[in-house]
Every structure is written in C-alpha cells, then in structure tokens.
Amino acid sequence: MQLRIPGPTPCPKEVLEAVGKPMINHRGTEFLPIISRLVQNLQKVFQTGNDVLLLSSSGTGGLEAAVASFIYPGDQVLATTIGYFGDRWAEIARRQGARVTLLEKPWGESISPVDLDEALYKNPGIKAVLITHTETSTGVTNDIKELARVAKKYNVRVFVDAVSSLGTTELETDEWGLDVVVSASQKGLMAPPGLALVSVSESAWCMYRKEYVRSFYFDLGMTKKHFDEKKQTPSTPALSICFGLDVALEMILEERLENVFYRHRSLAMGLRSRAANAGWQLFPDARIASDAVTALKVPDGVDGHGVVKRLKEEYGIEVGGGLGNFSGKIIRIGHMGNVHRTDIDKIVFALRAIR
Ligand SMILES: *Cc1c(COP(=O)(O)O)cnc(C)c1O
Image (cartoon, rainbow, N blue to C red; front, top):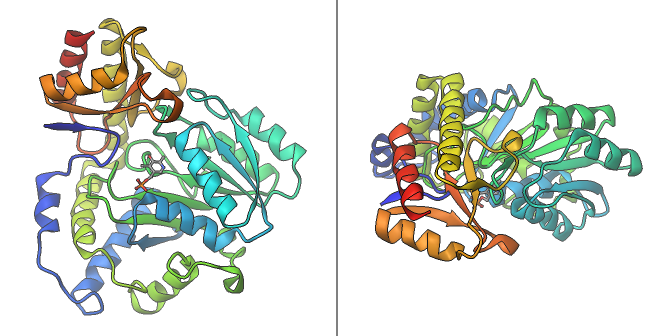
C-alpha cells in the first residue's frame, strides 16, 4: 500500500529501525546527546537561532501550546483562515479566552498581503496574527514572507502553523521574522506522529507571563526552563519518536534543505501538469498551489469517496478525501517527506486510468 495521505507520511526504513530501539532513561546520560542534536538539527531545518522546543503530542498540541503560552484571556488576536486547520487554530485561541478577530477567505484561496494589511489597520490592539503556511485541507500555501512583512509594520507578532510545510517548502524563521513556528514529526519530517516542535523568538518570549498561563502540559516557558537547565523535557518524552526524528533530520540535512525543497517543488509541479493532462482540474489556482499536498477537483457527477476507494482498492494508493464542505468534492494527494519520482508516476498512472 502506498500511503499518499497528507500525513502521516511514509517513514524511511532507517527511521523505522531507530524507532524500534530499546528504551533508555530520559533523564540519563544516553538521552543528552540525542536531545541536544535534535534541537540543533531542528534549528537548521527551521532556519533559526531561536529556541526550538519539543512536546510529546501531535501538531495540534503545538498549536495549543503556542496560544496557551503567549495569548492570555482578553488578548486580541487576528486568526487568518483559508481552511480546516486555520479554523482549528482560531477555535483553540477562542477556547483559551482570546478575543479572536477572524480574517477568512474561501477554501481554495490564500490570504493576500493586502487582506492582512486591511485587517490589521482596522483592528488596532491585535497582539498576534495566526497564519497557516500550507493549508493541508485545500492544498494552498500562503506567502508567509510577505504576510510577515505586513504584520511587522504593525508591530504584531507572527505565529505560523508550519505542520505540513516544514521540510517541504522554504521557510526562513529568522530571516522572515517569524515569532512562533509550529510543526510536527509526521509530515515533511518523515518520522512517525508523536512530537510537536515549536520555535519561539526573543520577541515572543517578551510576551510570556507565567502567571497567566492556564495550561500546565503546554506551558512552553516550563519546557524551555527544563531544556536550558538540564537538557530535558518536563515530562517523559516520546522517546521512540525522538530516536526516529533524530535519524530523519540527519537524512534531510544530508540531502541539504535546498535540494529537499527543490525535490518537493518538482514533484508537485510534475504531478499538477500530468494530472491536468489526464483531465483532472486543480482545486486552487496553480500560483498558490502547495508543494506538499495537491488537491484535485472530483469531476462533476462523480462521488469523491468512490474515487478515494477505487484508488485504494484497485491501485493500492491511499489518498485523502475532502474535509468539511469539500467532503466528496476534492481529493488530496500528499507528497511530503520520503517521496520520489516513481511515487508520482504511480499516482499519475492511477489518476489517468480512473478518470
Ligand atoms: C496535519 C496538520 C495539523 C494537525 O496536526 P496533527 O499532528 O494531526 O495534530 C495542523 N495544521 C496543519 C496545516 C496540518 O497539516
């Protein structure tokens, strides 16, 4: 079976071998070099000198930690959303008691710098803006670099959901001035699910007030303190995933980041043009289409669930269906992480055959 859902993604065999290693003492000397190397290599992948913190949770836990640690009840935030995951982050902020202003675009579109400029102009008092880098539900990538530039003009902190984009799409945390960037182990980073990764800038730490943080587990200040003082995590980390991610990051850095991004770009472009040749229509505009996940429109009169089922049963390829209102209307093909030209050939063959 070919796992072509937009996460979790297939792990290289070296990663799976590492995941199967025996347990060690997470407060002992064996774990020290592993966690230190993990953080150093994550800094390279995030392209940052900022803290990168490890949480044992899925990516959503990282989104929750970002909000719980820096956005307090009554704080104003601008939540931008272009799909399912943007909606989710806005809801997390609401539940934490933030006053959330929504900047929403229809599914399949992106947030433009002008949209953001207008929203920040109209809403003074916004403390942070939440932005999804790649919206995995629609296959759209926002231009984070330009959006961050606008936010800086208003002195607003930039929080980025990079769960599906990190390790697939260029993202320069420091160069672009991103304050909090959230990712996870199981998409572009080629490891199993179980770790959320969060980078935090100096400017974001200036917002931190321990007395206002309502969450214990997702208190990033506590996570930082344990790492800085002891190179440990506050509670037991998902050790097996740490072992796997350690190997995966070494593989990514060995291939070199620019080559990893180039590979994803060429695979995505190849898939888009070959799917178009086979009669499939891309869901978003090609100019904003993601390099990590491709969303295709299901032909009129065809049920998308049936397409997903046929790809699985007849071709052994498991893809994602549409979420929310787009259930049955689009299919989503993940091509992040450990994915190569031959994988794209297989999916194109199947798409051609069932169209
Ligand atoms: C997958 C994903 C998430 C959620 O991650 P989980 O690990 O499932 O909690 C959040 N945001 C984006 C953009 C994603 O692709």
